[in-house]
Image (cartoon, rainbow, N blue to C red; front, side, top):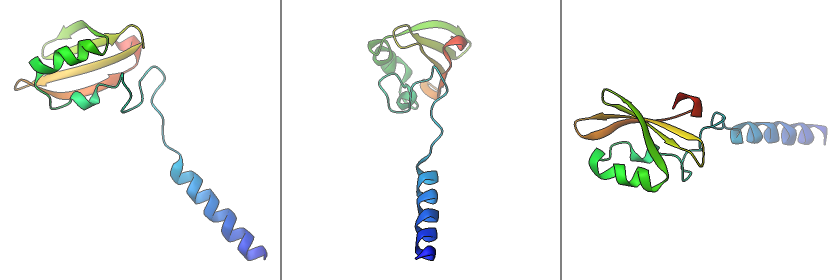
Amino acid sequence: MILATRVLATATVFLLAACAEDGPTVGQPSVGSSSDLSAFEGARAGQAEMGIQNLGYELIRTEGLTAFWFNRSTGACARITTSNGRYSDVTMLPPGDC
């Protein structure tokens, strides 16, 4: 009986540990949320820009081929790098980075 209880307790700990995930940094949207832009990675820049604006983002600044987009209503910030006409890197950042 004691062995079965220990096995059950150990299995429970492993299952709970497997379920624990690192959540988004404070101020960053969770992946897949309506304010997460990571799905735009690989998209054609000219066509995706309207989609980003439709999600409530506005272009804050650019640094070369890197653009910073900010959503005032959610506080979400995205850094998007363009290469060969496509979004090559989309990274969600803390609001202060915008």
